[in-house]
Amino acid sequence: MSIPSVALQGTLSFEQVRGLLAHRFPFLMIDRVTEIEPGKRLLALKHITGNELCFLGHFPDRAIFPGVLVLEAMAQAVSLLDLVSKENGGPPSKYLGSANAKFLVPIVPGDSMEIEAVLVKQAARF
Image 1 (cartoon, helix red, strand yellow):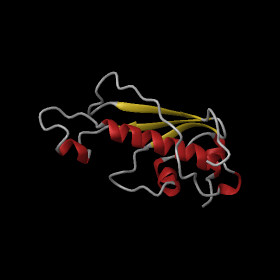
Image 2 (cartoon, rainbow, N blue to C red):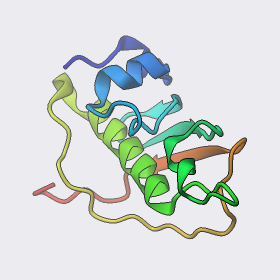
Image 3 (cartoon, rainbow, N blue to C red):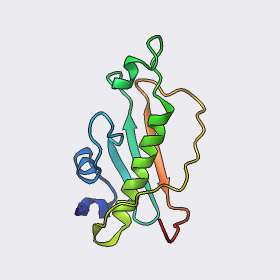
């Protein structure tokens, strides 16, 4: 797996993200990466549309993007940071140590999530 040279310039398009992550529709949660500092941080975008499959049942009366999918988007952003931070593009780490999330307002169609992944600490085994 090779890291696109554009990643070194700080951005990834949807097609480049799709080339790096194993996820596919409907579980590819990152639309674009707007900032990358390899080994430090990454800023990703997920646009929420009314066409998301989860809105068929969550909830029929009022579409709310599920918290578990917000966490999945966060995990994918961390995975991308891991990938672009490794020399020679080695395989991604298999574990996330933790995720701190507070859901303050519902995420609904028309919203965009800005997801910041920051490397705080790296354990020797992970």
